[in-house]
Image (cartoon, rainbow over all chains, first blue to last red; front, top):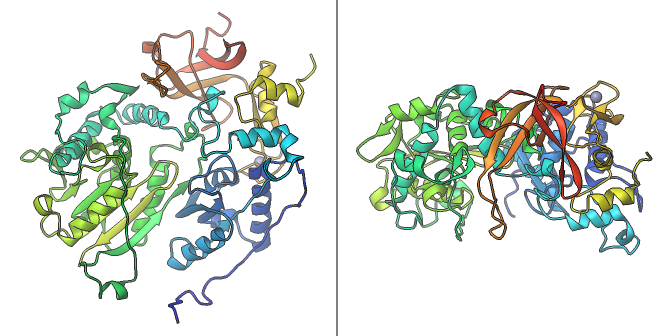
Length: 400
Length: 148
Ligand SMILES: [Zn+2]
């Protein structure tokens, strides 16, 4: 027998269906919403009891249809600690996994289908279906015909949010600069990094402006790369060759924004905050216990958001906190005199791996195998990876 | 003036994903009207263009003209084009306008008739229209110049 710890533990509580028809003249999202509203009513729950969503999509971040991002926004579901897309058989199974693992308690699964232009000659003559097929990819028509859609799943709003953060908290750009200096200093010690030269804070301010006030030194370096992981049970890993690193707690996060990023709910309401709150509600280890910290640095703004959402300092106080946590001997951060940050240089220096190099570095540090850049005695790591709007994770790993 | 047909909307916005949920908005743009969905049951404004009210789950949603008043919530200047074959001649502004109708209701646009250095968070702005390649698009200008 294979292990089956979820046997008879998870149940289906509600079902909702729309009409079936060859041409209902509706969008994928509209149909998905109708099924969702009916399933919620069938279960007899409030939609705010939903804390996980599995939307429809062939990619984790499918947009323009009935993906989790659009569903959460359109249904006004305030907070989720787990979100994902799936299709065919997978969506149902993903949802059961998530509830069984404790990542969330109540999942809404939505699968929505439209009659595609490639499936029917009549459908191929419908201008709505043709236009949908034309923009069928992830992200839809981002930044093309209509300027108002330019910030659908775009990086540019992060620059505007950076300016708004500095305005609202009356802080300058030093916090972003210091994060860049930290990561580049660590990158200089990482032979695998593509950026091996450390920079100074002055050098940060001299770097080229891309989306004013965001500079090229605020942005991770696009590279070709891959990372992979093997995940198994704590029992099985005991018999394996490498020293184990255990997953202590984790959470995802979703906030009610949707895919038009100008609708951001505000600095302390974005998905990082939901993910970190979901993590601390599940973790016995606290932020003060962390030896290592890996905040995602797609943009330095992300890393500042994760730092503040994790509770290392209060919102808007990263600059002062970083200055009081600066290790002048190595030109890097040691938060509260203890926690080392992005010890491989992260995306800013090692290269853009979508955060997967942060997981990899955390595992190797907790094994104690990082050689010259090993943080002696490191036992605990906090990892926060993702976007303000989608796919944020918060994970505590511990060595043994 | 009669409303443009579906075919005319598809042709006019040949480079936009028109669908059943947003076509009324684009029909409005062709007539120089900025329409945002509003819930008939509870009055909530709904953006982007969705058929269901996130506040009360009513399906009675009507594309409704907004006042055009708002404030500049956040903005950036794009200094470099995504397409290396089409470099920008000057920085391109992108500005999220918080519409007066409802807190958090924002429309991505541009502030025109205003020097870059004069832009400021929360400054009052009003709707105007700009022409680009033969099409009219919403833009905003500092309030007070609305009829200037
Ligand atoms: Zn309503």
